[in-house]
Length: 429
Image (cartoon, rainbow, N blue to C red):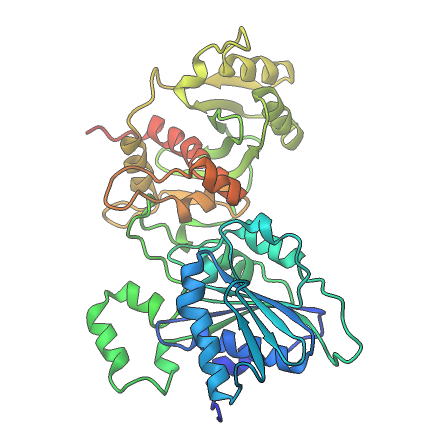
């Protein structure tokens, strides 16, 4: 069997650097040959490096079984490999074993801790955008199979394939925003697959709206806003914002303990500029104050505290409210402090509407800007969503946070930022 690979597929298979580890993502539209390329690479590695151990998986085993594993068997048939002669398949162990000693384990990643004992030469991830970032980091740590003497030019490889993310998640951040030298993103539009039926892409163009077509056919990193809490946030809302020590500095607070999230901003009569954030895990209000004083010890203008109205309630652990603690500490350090909060928190939908109105008004005016230093706030803007078919925000569960620690940072930084907007530019319904 002779394969004539597409340009993107060849780029995916070949390694252009000299690092000991290659990390690659094949990001393609529907029908772009993603799973075909991943399973082909897995077989080639097993053939080239006798005795290598690979792991192939997805977030659910159903996806592994019905998609990835079937493509492996198709490749083996096409290449003339015969079960019982060239390889063995163990259904009980979910393992392919080749005549030369190479083996591939097929697993799901829903319980990643069960994979921590493996030492691997390569990992393949089906629908990579479905797995949590923490699982990806754990899989990276398993790339430590002992290299054999007859493995010429061997490199550890972790590779995945996926459709573009519906929002700018960890793959976008890791492979687009801040990629390491040995991290590769290969983009494969459906339109470049010359082996698809004639008119296939034109039919998809008729079915999908423009933005969906850009993502799932052209494989572009667009923003598909359906379900996102924050609408119409674009690169126009991101700018380098310079802290001004003579200006009023607003600290807007969410007092969750893990994490506690404060955003720092300057504002004008109609615009707000978020230039920094303080997001701390397992902390206290006092420690967050200390972090602020460490970063901005010489602020000359007034400090105005905004935020969650419930922070003005006493707790069973302190005779002071959160706002009293902040004011006492900042006054002690010599700052000019004022507190401006509402007597009670408005419905969250009011805060969302007020925030979105500043992001971009109906007539296109942008009045809200965020500096790239505010990583957790931007993470919220790009990823905070409604539960499907509802107007309720989809807050991660405890079990989801256990699988992906990053999810704990959803909602709290946005809450802190939206309290400030709602205080000065409220929308009443």
